[in-house]
Image 1: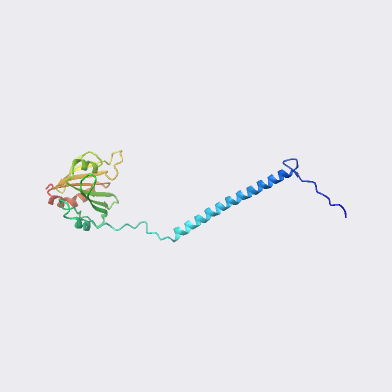
Image 2: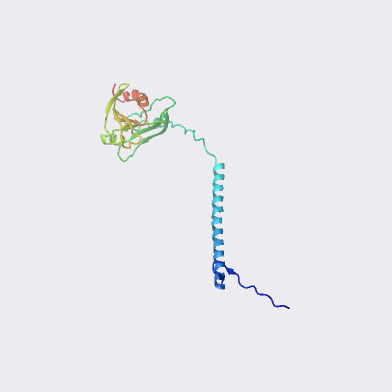
Length: 220
């Protein structure tokens, strides 16, 4: 039998000579590590894609309400009726057109300022906000807090009721929902009408309260 021909070790281009056994082992270890890293990255990408697919499925199958649908209006006359008699004056109940919607109504008692108050919040026909707060035996400090410590700018008479006017519409400070406010007193009540609406909608609200304010002993 003729002797087996042994091939000489291949010359590595980068080295210009054959690899040593140690270099061969190091190269194979590095290639193995690179392969594992690529597998890890691929697995992360596959996991991310699977998570996104699951989220998409959940979004598609979970029922969602109509984004333009509005919540049912709060029945503030019924809430007021249940609380009537618990305060020194009757709770005011605005009588407004059907396109005015109440989104909150509550009698606030045991407050930190010591003043009980009846509050109703409204979304106006022009999608603005008007709130009505009726404080019982309130003091000047309470009124100042309700109008964000703004100052009286004018007075305004609406249906025989004289209101102090707080107008912050041109103010550079952030007055929240108290861009404009009207305040008056009657009996043991201090009434504050405040919000972001225009003059016409404030007049509508003030007019809806006028007869009840007169019955409490307000301006006539």
